[in-house]
Amino acid sequence: MMMINLREYVKIAISISFILIAMQPSIYAQNEQISWGRAQNQDNGWYALEEAQRIADNVLLYQHENGGWYKNIDMADELTSAEKEELRKQKFTKLGTTIDNGATHTQLRYLAKVYNATGEERYKKSFLKGLDYILEAQYANGGWPQFYPIKQGYYEHITYNDGAMIGVMDLLHNIAIAKPTYSFVDAQRQQKSKQAIDKGLEIILATQVKVNDKLTIWCAQHDKDDLSPAKARAYELPSLSGKESAGIVEYLLKLENPSGEVKQSIRSAVQWFQDHKVMGKKVVWIEDSTYTDNRDRIVVQDSDGGPLWGRFNDITTGKPIFVGRDGIIKQYLAEIEHERRVGYNYIDNYAEKLLKEDYPEWERKY
Image (cartoon, rainbow, N blue to C red; front, top):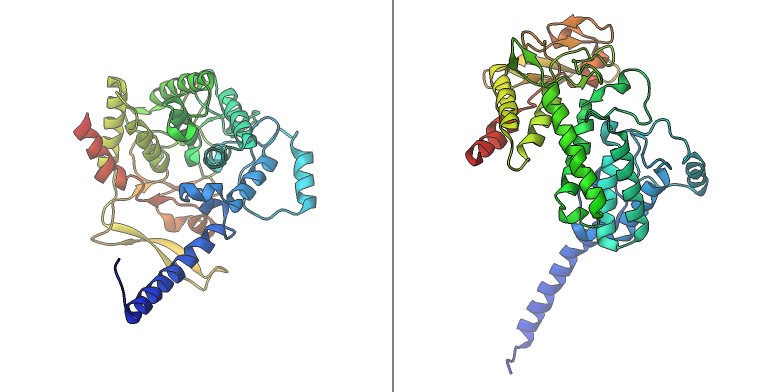
């Protein structure tokens, strides 16, 4: 038997105390109230905790009877009894359920994590209802509208804007390949998910814009009938979208055994990004007391700046365009109103990671 003296014992005791003290913040951090955004990115064990289930129960309350959710809601907020009762009354309101701004597919990802951690059937039931909603919302041609039931106007377009359709397809892809997080989904729904992403891929390939018979990238939204680039809000004109197209290509890179058509689509889009990157400039925030928020966003010359791409780009020339609420195309960010400059990201490094990391890795594989 090993013997230790009193001094060594004290040293060991102090060391253990320091370790326990150091551990305490992370233990408490796991149980603290957090935002809906932070709740999406926690360790697997966190989703079994009381706080994770409290948020999941909120998600169930916000879900409408048709299976979908509204957008722009922090589902981690503490709800009063009166608020919960009002949400129960609103469940049968269908108009407004959407895939815009991460709605519905984000809730489903969260519920899957909590179900896997807890085994609580109510989370599985809610997930499957939401999955059925997404599958039902798909157009026969493979696209998804922004709202379902259909909301008239630009909301009817096939919507890539803000990652709407790609967010849905990424979820369905993970279900179709039986990724462990979604292994609880039954075989019939897995098959429907596979069929949905196959149709979705068809419409992605069909909507890739051609200029002079050469494939380029995509618009943020396309007409549901003739598939042409389509206008949405006044400052969202038919154009080539840097942000949304980068997201589409990232999705295509994940596909196993890509067809020749998919490979051509990827390489054509990457070539467009290579040909139309803006170098020697960068976007910066500055203090400006002229405005109530005391700030402005500007583009400045910088020899080390770039690559940048426009959120909107002229279909013919591929050059970034800047459009305010008046719907008039400008050449420079400084020419549109302050409210839009600071409220919408018109130019950024949208495809930088795609070109530097993800696409080269894909090429080495294929």
